[in-house]
Length: 199
Image 1: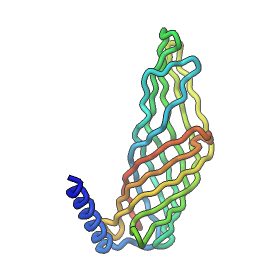
Image 2 (image 1 turned 60 degrees about the horizontal axis):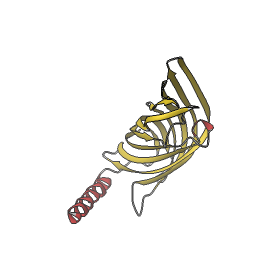
Image 3 (image 1 turned 135 degrees about the vertical axis):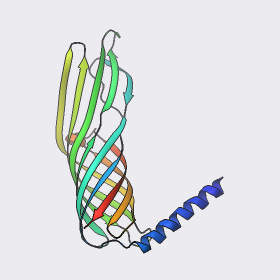
Image 4 (image 1 turned 180 degrees about the vertical axis):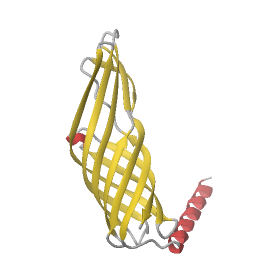
């Protein structure tokens, strides 16, 4: 079984490498793209005197982007990202009152991207700054209240881009967001796949 998996991985790598040669990408210029995937967090802060009964700490996320490819290796990229709701349900300590919390993240990021052209062509690393807003909504029988926090943070990540045509590429990646909303405890992982069009 392990040999079959290894053979399949090797075959896919060979096909992707061959495709990379056949579909040479544009070395410089403007590009746009769209990515979608799954965002995860460790947990949502429990309200004062609350007892968590369930939590959804992963949700869908989208990121739209525009960038400039400086040369074969370097690019700068501006993105806008948004998540769906992370959720938490619970009660007060006596179990007599139930509550629900929803949280989401929206923001912009500016990154520098380095793409390898040797060793593992298509592999890229990224790092940059973010400006984001974390919004929370608490619902309970007595009413609904909301809170939001905006601030700067940073990100880093890696991924792999594969050219399917001269101007079109697809990618898979992982990005770690730190200090969302400017708060050091707010961290998020984004596992994504996307498409990019180069002009």
